[in-house]
Length: 266
Ligand SMILES: NC(=O)C1=CN([C@@H]2O[C@H](COP(=O)(O)OP(=O)(O)OC[C@H]3O[C@@H](n4cnc5c(N)ncnc54)[C@H](O)[C@@H]3O)[C@@H](O)[C@H]2O)C=CC1
Ligand SMILES: O=C(O)[C@@H]1CCC=N1
Image 1 (cartoon, rainbow, N blue to C red):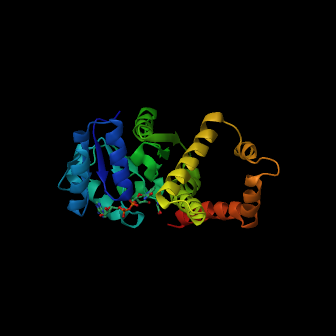
Image 2: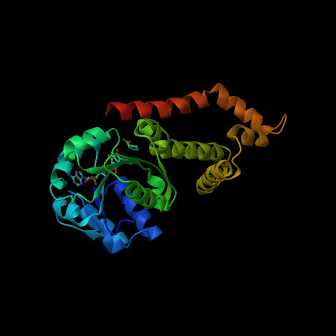
Image 3: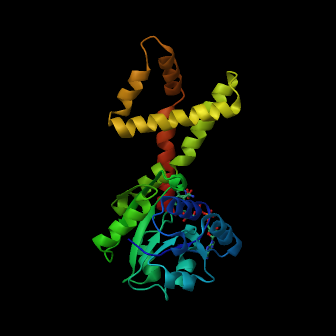
């Protein structure tokens, strides 16, 4: 396991990873180094978590056995330029950027660099992340296992062929946004029926959490679990019919495909 981790870019995803790591106690907070071009953002996260702010990207690279690049895809090239020279040959560079291939990352850093592409998601913050992990050829099995261990400490992490990363992005990378929209819509429906709003969010979120747990823990087909809720001639099948009429499944599939397509084009 890495003794030190650096995070370059402490925005929404960088922050979620640091908070997940610290809560999981996967690595001592004072061995997590943060750099943000807007220093105050890194300092705010350091205050919350006990991680350490460094002054320059060079220092970040020098100190980090695992260096997580959590900047936007369009500035990855310039951000890598600032860490390339000081990154130890033994360190592993971990990019979470959508749409930036292992090949392109190696082009920016040099052919010898150990690089792992990871597609995480923001529920990392509460220990329920889902991440894919795709190493390049310079990364050993033990180093890949170290990256999986880091991302497993705050959720699930699976070694994945890089060619599946567009699908991963469309499903679990972007997916929390679709689920929040679903939760909002469920709650709005109940509010329409007279339920107080805060109560509706609790009922909606716990329903999503419980249904997700049923899929993961029973191993049963989601369709069979759905059938168990639909009593013959009952209430649920009326609701299912309206969802089918509204194109719920096609809309959801199209959302995953749209995000995956965008990931390919970045
Ligand atoms: N937000 C999400 O749910 C997910 C994001 N990602 C990837 O994570 C990366 C970051 O995304 P977000 O956190 O959403 O963006 P964000 O805009 O919230 O965070 C980016 C951070 O980088 C900082 N920054 C800009 N230039 C910098 C530089 N040269 N050096 C250091 N820091 C710099 C910005 O001040 C900002 O705090 C993207 O590449 C995105 O594709 C991947 C999976 C999920
Ligand atoms: O919206 C984005 O581009 C990033 C990548 C996956 C989730 N958020």
